[in-house]
Amino acid sequence: MTASTPAAWLQGASDAAAGQQALSATGLALAGVDVMRVGIALACCVALGIVAILLLRRSQRIGTGGSWSSGTPRIAAAASLRLGPRVTLHLIEYDSRVVLLASDASGVKLLDAHDRRDGAREA
Image (cartoon, rainbow, N blue to C red):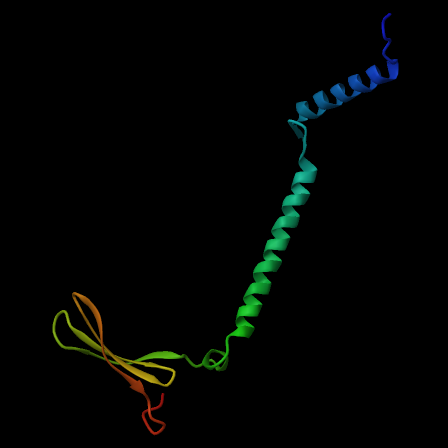
């Protein structure tokens, strides 16, 4: 008893093989991967990434308050004084704080920090 295979099934297999050979000859099929589908998926991923970046930038811009939104810098070097070839004093203003720093060959040291008075120097 032998099982007969339908001719339609064999015909479909040979058509698929012929189609694969035609696609591989033109370089459009890479091991059964549809290049058009991969290209569309890549374009969608890039578009989603760009939208995500824009939304994150917008949310960070909205989330920051204070001096940044008014355009004035929150930190400024009020003065610097060179004491020697390797030692420098820096007076830094940050929001309402004034900080005195000394920088030398070993690093930066905090010398003084206090809140600025209302009548003090304003930029």
